Image (tube, rainbow, N blue to C red; front, side, top):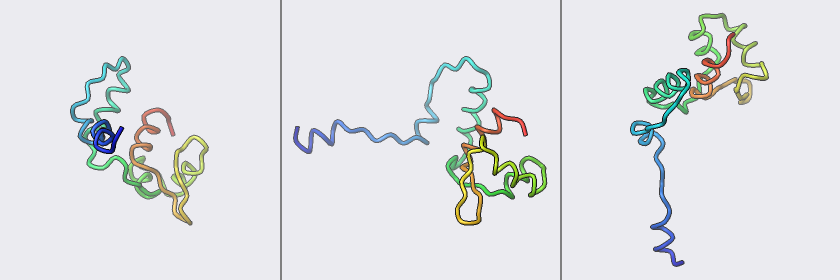
Length: 98
């Protein structure tokens, strides 16, 4: 297989573009709502901070830090800053209770 054939067989998938045209038969209502929420986001892969989570959950920053330290919360620690990917946060929020 030469380079031209190899290039033609590879397909680049733009996930944002494909989300608009996605046709998946989901049986679970919660999964349908989650997919619709993700479709509406401009950038679902942006990182949000402890303060953003605290505002969203209407809790104090100390409680938000406690949530970020939980094992089931998909956060990362960059230096002294705790961050979480927006899409991960939305998925966690729909599956868990604080």
